[in-house]
Image (cartoon, rainbow, N blue to C red; front, side):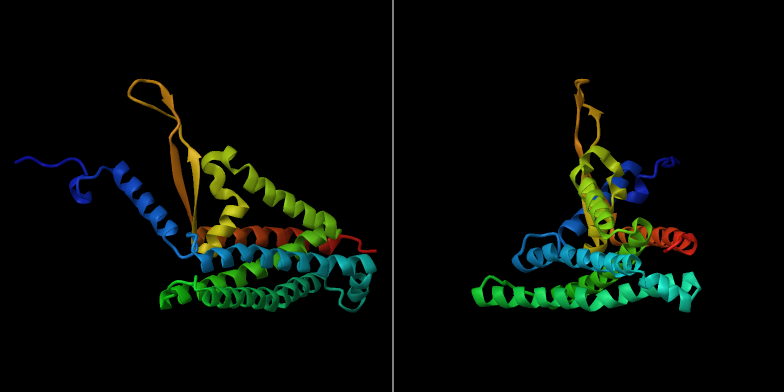
Length: 258
């Protein structure tokens, strides 16, 4: 009696490498077929507006704390509430909660306005119940991302003390991570812009070159497609904001605010 020593029978005749490649292909297809990955009129236009609301939340968070530092109001507050950790926590929470109506209200107004415009022009197409459920899920993820951006704005405002430095530094980082992504290859999966996109859309793809040798022995550069899922993107940004908050809180407790 002969026995199979390979695992191909358990995977429908596929090797381990082929099975892994098939799994990646399925993940890529799932992302590319989602509502937010296409170029349909409503979803594409609405998704392009979402980063503006996140930037608004970040800027509000920065200005919320830098203005009080500049005018001395924050130092005055500490004479009434000397526990700096509590003061910092209240500032971060207030910024996160205070920007929620701006982010959610602006987003819903954008979606509603686009829906009305495309419906009036006859270019809306079919919007199913599943599409509306995905729009609702996107709205929830956007709201959480806005809270994180506001908290990050407070943290950078405390660390850099000047609104222009905090906003300009963040903009430069995001521009660099988007503009030079291809130079990082597979390490793109750790870029902030890609992970934010993955969180909002429930997954994002990226491409990178992988050197190989063709049968003739000459070098070729095939392009591979990687996937960052939504959970990875959400945990990434949660970790980034948590680290910024811890560092800013530690600096805030020890810094002279006069």
